Structures are given as structure tokens and as C-alpha cells.
Amino acid sequence: MRRLLLLASLLASLGAAAQTPLQQYVKRLQQSGPLAEAAWGMVAIDREGRVLVSHNPTQRLVPASNLKLVTTGTALHAFGEQARFATELGYTGEIREDGVLEGDVYIIGHGDPTIGARDSIALKPDALFWKWKSLLKQAGIQKINGRIVGDGSSYEGQLEHPSWNYNDVGTYYGAGTSALCFYQNAIDFAVQAGSPGKPVSVRQSYPETPWLHLQNHSFTGPAGSGNSLYLYTTDLAPYAELHGTFATDRKPKTEHFANKFGALTCAYYFWKNLCSTGWEVSGGYADIDRNGYIRPGTDFVPAQKAGKPVVVGATESAPLKDIVRITNVRSDNFYAEALLRAMGEEASQTAVYDSCLVAQREVLEDLGLDPGGIRQVDGSGLSHMNYVSPQWMVDFLQAMRRSPAFGAFLGSLPKPGEGTLSSLLQGVQGRERVRIKSGSMDGVLCYSGYILDTDGQPAVTLSILTNHSTVPQAEVRAALSRLLKLLLEEN
Image (cartoon, rainbow, N blue to C red; front, side, top):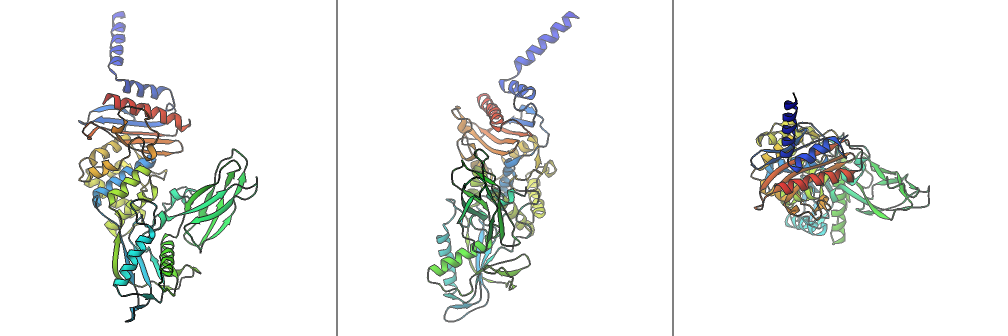
């Protein structure tokens, strides 16, 4: 009996000695530390598919912005990296011989999320408007006896997914997409604390939305109470209310909220540009409501059914690979949702979320994946109803390696020091070989992606998903950074 105990002890010690430092650290995290009481899972495999480390590989967890990997990867696979979004210019009515249009000019959106965006890949509004004016001149239009109509009617359904938190949908990161957008459907306000208990000073800075009626119900909170300002608004009517508090010790700042009228804002700014450059536009600006009626921006009363415009030309966005790069580096919710809705529109001419997800499942099947292995309801990961396992995420990342779009996909992933990874693995040798996407919410922190070899090819494919943590996120981040460091050292 004693010999058997000694043999068991020897085998146990040999097994422990055979474990790598990474495997030993994962085992410790299961028993103590910031992840001991959390729900979490991890899978890392080498280039041959051998498992380097695994913990709860099939447990489905909320991925937060790690879901953008699935959205951007499937969009690249479906459309190709050089695909572009088009925006058409058209008109209704008749063009007289003297160049006067007796009718309306339409800006017809097809999902380009970059119009008016402050990104290097987007044309500045004045440059874009110059192109639109050139298209009108080529059609023989010199004066408009009618309106500028922002037409975002090709995308049906709600702007946002119904599972998003109510306060999120009033923020810039919860701004819903539409077929015709402007400035990523965001709106900026300069805010400054007042006296304790008094309203916060609020001034709209950009873009202008003359139709919007804002009521300020916010209050200045005591020092240390933070910032809980939220804009509550809807696309059903031009009203918004600002609620929450802003502490007296907070410095003045610009807050970014959601603008529910992207198409109308686009029409307004094109109308404004036309008027400032010598064009005559008699009817002002308008958009199209959900029932297909033209809705003037002045009184918001639907006037008449929208017409079927004659298209005179189109402008295009930057290539999809550039949009995807910004989506993943900046973790841009707006761009991610735009990509998902574009897949639905392309597949079925219906951009409601249910149709979009059917289209994406077809792309996953084409990649050789089981769509039943993931529960996805949006494109950005903002919903808490998304669930995926570390194993499925690794399978997806492996499947993307077989896609013709893999080069663009890999090139879109940030490395430590970029975007949301700005402070990750600081001072760690070889960190430039890491290409991963982060994802975070309250109690959620995730990393998924690749570690490259010296030739720039994936040597390790990994996914780490952590949920329901109640310790400070900095402690969880430190633990996951240690995991990534050990993966680097051992591969």
C-alpha cells in the first residue's frame, strides 16, 4: 500500500512538472485570483491544431466586442475586401431647358456608414458635396424648385436592436444605423457642471439639428459622483431629454450622443452647402418617414408620398477592408452594425435584424462552421443576449484562415499599443506578434485572435472569454495579460 502511495505521489509530481508555466497559471486561476468566482473559458491551439491550453472550452459566454470578429470576418468573406458602399443622387419631377428642376433632389442611401464621419477614410463633407453637385450639373440641373430629400428608406426596421439597454441607445456607441447616415448618426454637446443641484450647462456643438427639441433635466452632482448623462430620444418624433448628473469636479467636455435622424441631417447639410455656394433651393430639406412619406425638417408633418427618383450618378465609400480595419481597431459599434445590416440587405433586400442574421448564418455555413454554435443578435456585441464559446470562436478564427479575405481580416486586427489595446503588454518582448480583438462590458473582458510567427503567419489561435467578474476590471486585465505573455514566451 505504501508503495502504491509513493508511486501515485511520484506520478502526480511528474504530471505537474510536465505542465508548462502557462498551463500551471491557468490551473491557479481556476482556484484563486480575480477569475476564481467568475465564469470564464479559454482555448489556445497551435498551427497544427494541437491544444496548448483549455478551460471550459464549450461554455457559452457573452463576448462583448469580440463579436465584431465574426461580423467583420463574415462581411469580408461575403463581399470581398474591395467592396464599397454606394450613395446615389437622383431627382423627381422635370428638368426645364433653363436648368431649373421642378421637383426634388434625392440622396439615396445604401448603407455607407462613413458619410460625414471624422475618419481619414471618409471624404470631408464639402468634398463629398462637391461630387454630388457635379452629378447634378452633369444632369443639367442648376436650380432646384423643390427640396433636398434624404432617402434612407432602403433599410427597414428599427435603428437599434431591441435588446440594447435603453440608456445605451441614447449614446454614440448605441447609435443605430440607417441606410443614409451622417457623422455616424452621432451628435455632440458641450457640457459643463453648474452649481450643485442646478442643471448642467449644455450646448449643442455639431452637427446642427434645427428640428430637435431638447429638454435639459440633468443636474450637477457633488464632487466624486461622476458622469451619468444620458440622452433619451427616438426617431418617431423630434424630441430629446437629457437626464443624469455631472459632478462639480468634472472638467468641461464634449459628450457624444445618438442622433436618430441621420438621413435628415445629411439632407440638411447638403442643402446648407448648396445655399452657401450659390445654388437656389426653394423647398428646404426633408427625409422619408417609415410609411414612405416625405417629412419636411421644418414642421415634421408628412406631406406626400415619396416619388421614384431618376438616378443621375453615385459616389462610393472607401474599400471595405479600410472600414473593417477601423471597426476592429477602434471597436466601432456603428460600423459593425452597418456591416451586419449590409449583409441582410444584399441577401434578401431586407435589413431588419432577423434577416441580417439569416444572411450571416449562410456565410458561416460557407466557411464550414456550424451556425448553431453561436447565438448572435447584433453586429457589435452591445447586446447581452449574444453567446459564444471559446472553442467556437477559435473554430471561426481558424475558418477565416481559409477565406480569400484572410489577409484583410488579419490586417484589420489591432496589435498591443493600438486602439483598445493601447496599454496591453507594455514592455513585453515580442508583443508586436499579437493580433487580437478585445471586448469589454461591466463584468466582461475578452480577447480573441492570433499570435504570429516570425513570418507573420498565425502560430497560435486563441480565445479568452471572462464574464460575471465582480473584481475591478484592471485586476482581470492583469491576469489575462499574464496569460498572453506566457503564450508569447512559449510560442
